[in-house]
Image 1 (cartoon, one colour):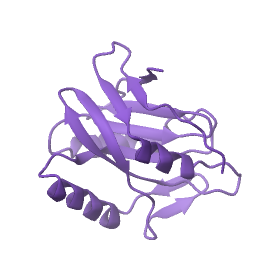
Image 2 (image 1 turned 45 degrees about the vertical axis):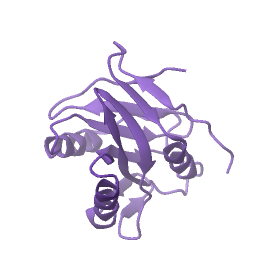
Image 3 (image 1 turned 180 degrees about the vertical axis):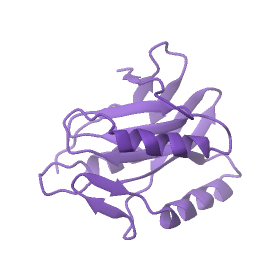
Image 4 (image 1 turned 90 degrees about the vertical axis):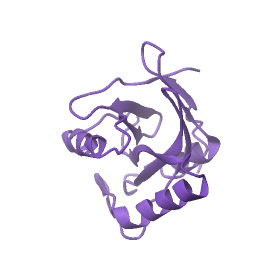
Length: 161
């Protein structure tokens, strides 16, 4: 598959919150792009570190054999993903943590569905640290990046590059 070169640096419109995706996370996104009509959605967790109000995404977990994958639907089954997150948390002394979720859409420039919004708000409410959840949709040509609050729509981030 050809490399898509998704951009690494993103910010809220007011530039008060920055998100940077490390190369391993970008590589995972690029390897799961739904390039063909027969490709299934994929997704996983975003794991990273917090720096004040800023987020460094170090890793994106990959779909597991337990996840439900269809052309227009991805359902992450927590078991495999949560064990990876717990392992990273322990190994880093609590520095690397769950920061959000990612999944693909078969669109060039993706946007969230009603189901996405409902699930994101539920997941955001469950955050132990009270922070907004980072939500990423990987499209064929671009990413959609949003900081999701406990209810409603959060700031949609734009590229810094």
